Length: 191
Image (tube, rainbow, N blue to C red; front, side, top):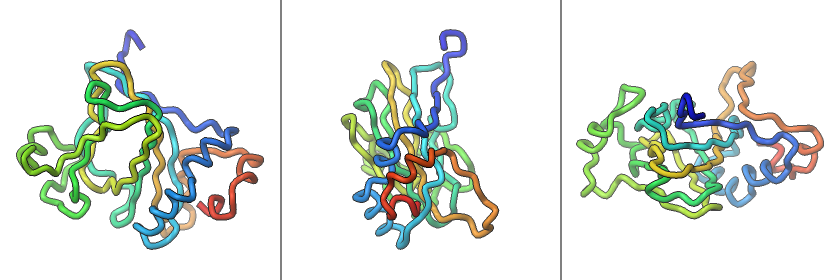
């Protein structure tokens, strides 16, 4: 850590911990996700990320759009620590999941985003939240994790989207033990 000064570390969910999966698959959140997407999607990624102050940015610290799916994508951000300005708030450009004024690149500079969506537009939202807060977001819109200046920020992520049309697709960024899976409700298990 001292030598490389990473800005981000990712951890897989504890595959033996029912409480983590129960949190990611909370029925209230699933209802919102289903209503937004119009059907029951799949949970394809679930992990925990810690962001640190660092002289180096990684991809999630730049403005970007998630490209997991062209039409339907919801990401759940579950805050395990309080998130204030100094420890890197999550930022999002409201309605940018339908506004492709900035499009065609994978990452965008702060200047490009500020010129396109100036502060006075009120469209850039900084999530200053308490531990335990959950944000459900269509991350096809422009967003980023601001780089922490002090402390750290711990977040859980869950990515919900349609299973790709080709059935051989099996990229799932988590594992779950059979005994934990058996504790899930039928509704949770179908995800």
